Image (tube, rainbow, N blue to C red):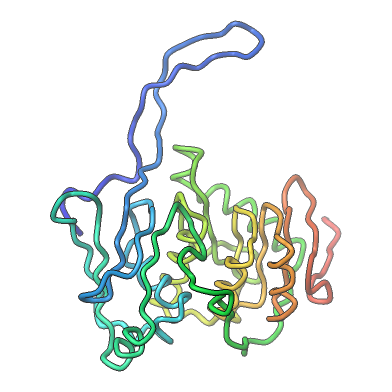
Length: 277
């Protein structure tokens, strides 16, 4: 990694005020770094995404996979993080296997991404992403497992604990243990980073489920399905198109999972409600 890669947070001065009691005091606060990251499939730039500058190799792999540029991690020869020559941001230079590079060149497009942008730059509605058929068996979610995973994802959000301004995605066992977590200012970026990590570890998509702290829009559901997982739990609400895609792909979708309650939007037959002991 570049020696002067931006830190994930910066310390800023703030003034804390009370809205009803007149309290006013100076203080310090950690704010998450947001850095332009140019994804380059050597030598052609493909996308500029606003990212938290950590776990970028994971991001490159996960993004490449969920965008359909690669079919497996074996299609990537290397990922190199570079500084932009004019210090405008970072470059993720991804070297693809020759056949994948040829396929990519045949359909290359440039997109300019905002924070967590999901479908910027598509040329027509026919280009909307749609995952391949999932081969993993249906996954059973239990309320006990979800309660544990929701507690553990909060405890594992170190960057959000410091800043209060980033999203997280976690991979959980059937028992609700969080095995991996990734954070980013962009919700799509956090999920891509996590999927990249799982691909690097050859994790079986049928062995667990995702928990995300953001709303579940259709592109988040598509990324889950692209990885091959059969269940996702979102702390916020899903969109109508996300629910439609969950039904299309056979993904169990549980959302608004907070304060001891949750709503099952798809796959209720694979959710087991248990009484606490």
